[in-house]
Length: 196
Image (tube, rainbow, N blue to C red):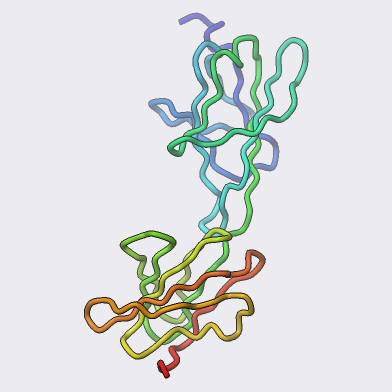
């Protein structure tokens, strides 16, 4: 393999805290200083948010050729991977990847019981421990909360959030659906209220 086959430097924009890795056999981490890559094949990479309270809201890339730096181009993931085509990279000396993160909505179980919370259409929920357990959701997500029979979660302090249900579940449990959770706030699930 000649040096020209690796004539591309892939780097992340200064200040990006997300983890960007090439989809190669070594899963090479892309850094601000840059890593060598081929400008003769598609550049495939993955992006992981910097913390479980954040999500990746946008990824863009900027290609530099002998003519100068291009403009930032948005890119979408397909099956969790981002691909910049070899055709776009054929005259490139550098590609800079920029990642924008936003905060997830944090749902905290402040009740005195462990809860099972499912997001959107998940069939298996996640156990969220009592008092301090959290789960992050995207704006627009709906959650389903499993409670003991005859009880419902208390969300009375959160304007805009609405709760529907219950739907009976096995083992004397009820499933409550909560939607309309504000994108700019978090949600605490307080101790259960008796079902009237």
